[in-house]
Image (cartoon, rainbow, N blue to C red; front, side):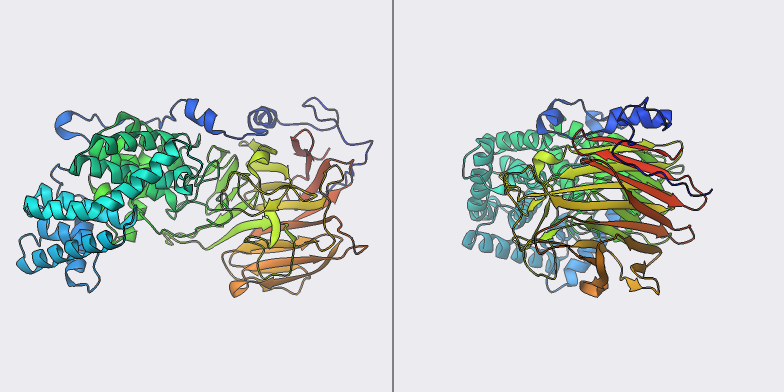
Length: 633
């Protein structure tokens, strides 16, 4: 179609009403405008919200065969049994083995090495050594988890006498008490409570540790606190099923496995129905996973952008086993290729089910919808996905991923962040403490509106906030420093386009300091290569084009040139507004352009043009948090 010009002046900007003359809003847009504008999820809302249903029949769970039973026999066709045997064999010959698999290999009925005297001696010595290390230097999380799991195996198989087990438990006691005391402070809201008491993954790991302790010592106070920790963690579960990484932040993709595994282990040990409910409620999050078996990570906190597996990769199996969700089971199947040597797959082994039909489903199916895990829209078309989050402690309101058939547990490319930080000093990175002003504060995450048009296959978002100096999830964030950042984004199957601008906030009490310098930064997963066209870069299946009348120059930098940096010219030496447009085009699709339209104060308006597609007009009102997107008349 022919590109149309539609300039917005102070007198011609349509009012923010679905019935505004001159712009026709598709019915779906109007419906989703009401549903998505300013979506934000508070802990209180999470705690009182009904459980997220997976829509699939759960396992019947008779007492004789309850799913997850850690003392039930393992079926020979269970793929995690084959993995466990490989891990045990590797541990038997490794100089620095996974201690858990040494013990399992020596003792478990299903182990092919059971009864090997040399392995049994090696396992006993490894348990002795671990107990001695913890007695000398108590640790409330990682090593104590392994030691208690090993002691449970020795007890279960009656392979160590009571005096030996008592000695190991005595060595473990200080670590257990360290965990108990730290988490008791969190539950009691003590002023000196540690950060782990507001991080769901740490709460759930502690619940597993204390459930083990409650069984082995046995003392009810450990089990009682474990129950309280699970309920505390539940207040951080997002409407889409994932857990925040810390406080009310976005999820960190790596920690899905930790959350599911430790909660699953707690459930195995206690059969607490609340744990089962929470695990079933995690199933919808697996629908946000990509075809490669991973999740996007742009919506995570600024220091937790993880784009690989790490940690317990098999947690999806636990969710699938209890929920019966075929997508969760299909995700777990993809992740089986990781074949991790950590002990975590031991937990997943008891949740595997052969009766979930995954022949008609796969992770990463096409989608155009709201995601309750990112506080914004999600679009997925084939190997291309775009998300538009705005989450506390984050640093971006957009992210994109590119997968490739056959590339499981890896990305062809991704856009991790598109930012406009205000630098306090020269630095090779905008992230970190005291480097620049860029973080989304918790109290402004609600200044975010999203639109989803499922019928036409596009999403859009607008957001604004006063960027802050970075913190690692502390509740008291630094004050605003006189800047306000606003941005709009539009995405469809061909790519994405956005405009970001940061300006001194004349209404703020704090004023920008003279040394404040805005710069644009976009972070990718693959290197950027400058083309013959100014401000245009190629990067592994994507073309990045940067625009703006104040751009002084752009360059690729960062590790392996995976970051695009933008410098601006300013009319005076005083801090001044800066902005840039960015389009990201998929290979084989026509390039888009984005132009900032003139408008009154408080309105960020832009026009997106692509050959063969309608010209789309985007209006975002930073004061009322209203967003409108429609074809140009």
